Length: 238
Image (cartoon, rainbow, N blue to C red; front, side):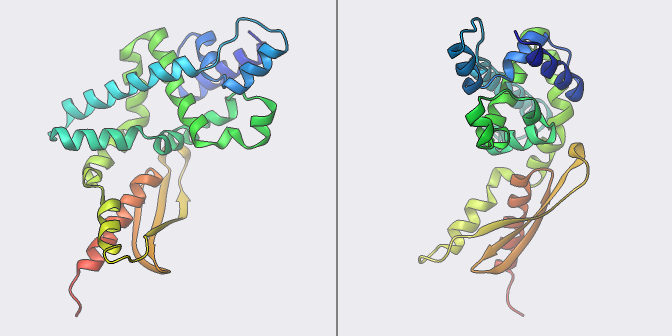
């Protein structure tokens, strides 16, 4: 394995606070475009993070299911909706950006030139692959500690903000009755350091601001903006 990939793995491990086998962490950062270029140049024994991403997806699902079950009194339907919200590609990509994972991902030249280090799918897959690397190296308890550190505030926010009700869908259904326009969401500000980042979002309809929302992820802020928009729409006229 190239020294650069091991060095990337070492720097990332220090950055995000994990103690995992460096060769496995290095693999978690290898996108298929990078591996294909390495194999075409005659190198052998390199493998992309695809298989690790598959395992990490399952480990992450278990962590979220266990956490929602043991720490909150929620129905099965609510737990399913919150887990889906917290494990979707957009949300995982935001977490990866908080941890600056994109800086360490190994990409092929073409993928790197086209902005791959900030592509949601690549960031989300790398995050799940890193989870798998930690699981294989240290077991599920280590994964739980790592994810508690970075996920707890988001889980609490998702539960307390009513994400399980999916206010964005409710707002869309209400505003599109009779063929009306679709609500739009605009990120207006991001404040605070990466580990405490706060997103501010506005919900628009036909150029008019319907509601404002804040959250520790863009998705959570959008849900809050949609919730506020629904409240404003449903308030009786003076």
